[in-house]
Image 1 (cartoon, rainbow, N blue to C red):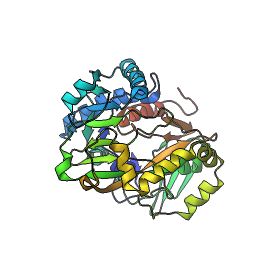
Image 2 (cartoon, rainbow, N blue to C red):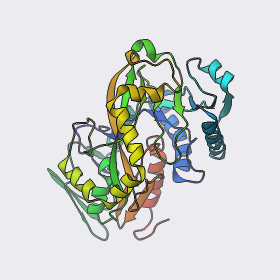
Image 3 (cartoon, rainbow, N blue to C red):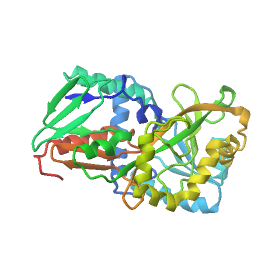
Length: 373
């Protein structure tokens, strides 16, 4: 086995910039790949962290309804959680919510006691060590510059080396569509990068809430809204929002790629997406530019948060797949062309489900070429 990593270390992009949450499976449509792989992934990840001495803090999550409309949507999440087999999920009325978390405001909440937080970069480094210990190679600073696909093998070109492989799995995150197209896969879905910006609670405010606190998400979007996430290092973050990034790895507002601008300008899928959701884009951009507007969202369920309680935190970039119609791809999507398997869409909760996704891919690799389940 050979792993090609373009950066000098693993987990430098989505894995190293996410909120560190192990999702329990509340949100996902029953029967979907997300629902099934998340539940399987939680069990595998918990077992792996325990076996390797890695942090796994099962402190629980509250999804908070702020009004009657959100209460109805929260009931639907409760039904999904039960159908997905999420353990211990419990409905809380306002008094019970305030008893658990006195500094959280809401009219009702759903408690998921098994939601956990971990250190995903540490897990990724452990995975890399496993590959090496098993006799494989993890080639860092080795960007893939070309792929030559034949019926029964693939030649992978990097700046310093060419490797011929019987099978290739593309797990390229923000570059997934570009590499998949190089391997002969369909151009859609296309990756549209969305920057997720965070604010970090200052030390005096970080301990006011113990559990993860989420608003009820808008069912039209795969984003979960601005939430409060404690981290295993003792810090706590508010976020992320979701604003269009102008570079695949555009972690700062000033990060602009002319290549990415050209791709967006030429993308019919992007313009269809923009026409459908421009108002939401404007609202997210407003919160990005004005911290008071960002905090106004958080203050609907954390009314005590003030500007003096927060500081800036590192942003992440989400690789959001978009179909040719402009529709946001919600579920995991994995395709195969000859000896090449491509993970075309793996947004949150892909880190939670990572080991279950790996199981699925390994099972596919064991099938003869030309056969798919």
